[in-house]
Image (cartoon, rainbow, N blue to C red; front, top):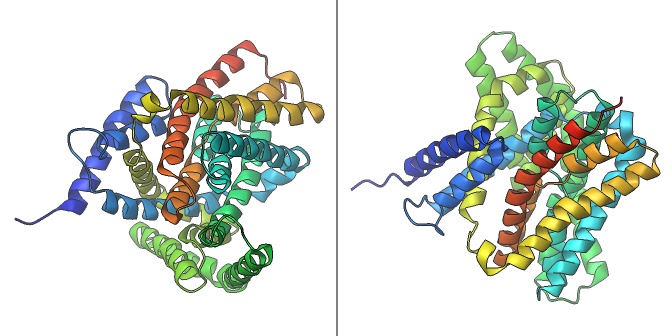
Length: 395
C-alpha cells in the first residue's frame, strides 16, 4: 500500500483550518484561534485523525520563511519614523517587563533561569496578524493609536529577528552547563554576527542592486505565474542561502529578501502575487503549532496558565500604558494601543519552537505559551472592541 503522509497532512491541515477558521470568524474571534484549534484536533494529543507531525514541522518551516518574507515586504521604516520617539522606548520597556515577569514565573515554577528567560521573551512580542486585523476592522491604521501600535510592532519585530538569530548561539552555550563563560559566549555571538553581517552586506550591495531589476524584467513579461514563481524563488533561495552558507536562520534570509524588494517598485506587485500562497503556508504554520499543544495543560496547570495570560494581557498592557502616559498620550489612545498589543502570536511561536528544538525551553513551558496565546488572542480583540465603543477616539 502506498503511503500518502504528505498529502494527508496537507489536506487534513487545510480542511480543519478552513472549518475552524470559519467558526472562529462567525464567533467574532481572530481566525488564528481557529487555525490553532484545528492543529490541536489533528495533533497527537487528541483522538481521531492524526497528521504526520514531522512533515507538519517541515511545512511549518516553509510557512515561517514565507511569513517572514511577507513581514519584510511590508516592513516600513517610514511608519516607525513617525512615532519613533514613543515606539522605541515603549516597545523596549514593554518587552523587558514581559521578559522579566516570564522569567520570574518560570523560575518559581521550578524551571531553570535559561528556560524561564526564553519563556519570557516569547511572551514579550505581539502578533502582527492579530493587531493589523483589529486595526483594519476599525479603520484605525491612520489614527494616532494605529500608527503608534504599528510603529511599536516594528520595533518588537526588529528585536525578535535579532533574538531568533542569536538563540541558537545562546542555546549552544547553555548546553555546556548553567555556568557560562561570558567571553566565550561573546566570541561565539561575535562570530555569528560577523557571518550575518556578511549576508546583510551581500543583500544590500548585490541584492538591492540586482533583485528588483531582475523581478521587474519578469514583471514586464506580464506573466502572473512566472512572477509568482520567481518571487518565491527569491524568498526560498535567499532563506536557504542564509542558512546553508552564512549559518543564519531561514527566517532571517527570507526577511531580508522581502526587505530588499520592499524598497523597489516591483515590491508591491511581488507582495500581491504571492499573498495567497503565503497565507496558505502561514495557515499550515499555525496548524503545526497547534499540533504540538497538549490541551491537558489547561487542566494540569491552571494556575500557570492564568499567570501566563496575566503577563500577556495585564502585565504588557500596564507597561505600555505607563510609557504612553509618560509621553503624554491621551487616555483613549493609550488604552487602545495597550489593549491592541496585549496578545502574542507568530514570532512567539517561532521563538518557542526554536527553543523547544534547541533544548532551552521545556515542553511544559511551550504548552503554556500556546495556552496563553490562545486565550490572549481571544481576549484582546474583545477588550479592544469594548474600549473602542466606550471611549471617543481622538486624532
